[in-house]
Structure formats: structure tokens, C-alpha cells
Image (cartoon, rainbow, N blue to C red; front, side, top):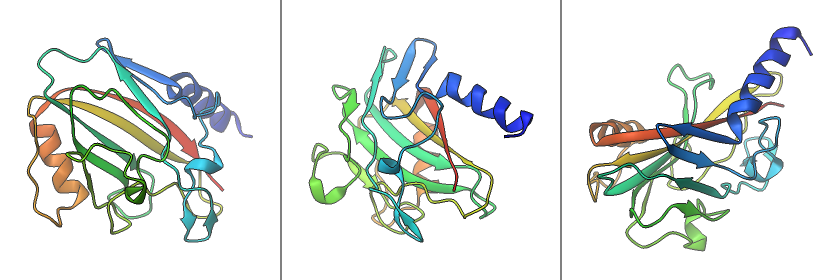
Length: 184
């Protein structure tokens, strides 16, 4: 491992397990101490053979005025010129401060009925795990929870993740992120 890679891994490990911004905190217990995603969060497709389970997430110290939450998982390192959206969730009630493992699987119906999973760059709603190209540098996967000043975000039925991100940011009170890495 090169000194630069070791430094990057160490920095990510320090910030990956839990993040805090102005008291708003996010934790993802499944992310290993070194910041790497496990095979549970790896896609089962496109040449990857993971379980494709979204990890359990929890957040605390909800900012004052929060009326709902949103969640995104984004890979800025994807070779698309615009990154890759792995998961976009809106309209999470303010009383919900944790999501169970595999909540990103729409077929399991682990989310409250008012919660909406927006189509990702995989073309459908729900969690799509990591699957960077073989031999590419390890990619960053940024898990972000947003505290919003609106109870509900209204989007067209086939809204893109980018449109959801635009509307999420228009209603932002605060956000907190955890970054994990994965490569193959």
C-alpha cells in the first residue's frame, strides 16, 4: 500500500464509523473500523457478488425545526462525470431516527408507508450496493442524512436522484455524512 493510500485510508477510517456536525450525528455500525464496506453492502450484479443490503443507520441530536429527513448514498468517484447515486430516500418522518439493515430493499417493506425511495442511477428505487470497476482506485461512498424544514417533498413519479437532491437542499436545515470506501 502506498503512503498516500495508507493516509487516505486512515483519514477515512477516522471519519467513517460516525460523523457529527453541530451535534447532529450519524452512525453506521456495519462499516468496518478501517472504513471499508463489507460484502453485505456490495451490489449483486454488474460483475459483483454481494448481498446488496443497505446498512443499518442511526442518527441523533435532531436539529430544531426538523419536519422530516432525507437520506442519500452517493459515489463521487464513478466514471460518469457526475458520480453515481446508490440510494435516495425522502419523507422520513421526524420520529424515525434509525433504519434497519436492508431497509433499502423495496420488496421487504421495512420503511413506513409515507417514505419514498427515489430511482437511483441503477434506474429503480431502492438501495444499490457498491460495485466499482475492477482495478479502479477504491471509491468513496458518502452516506448523508439531511434534516429538512418540510414534512413532505413532492416529486414527479419518475424524478431523478439529481432532482431529489436539488429539492432536498432547498429545504435543508442541517446534514451529516459518513464516508466509507470500497474497491476491487
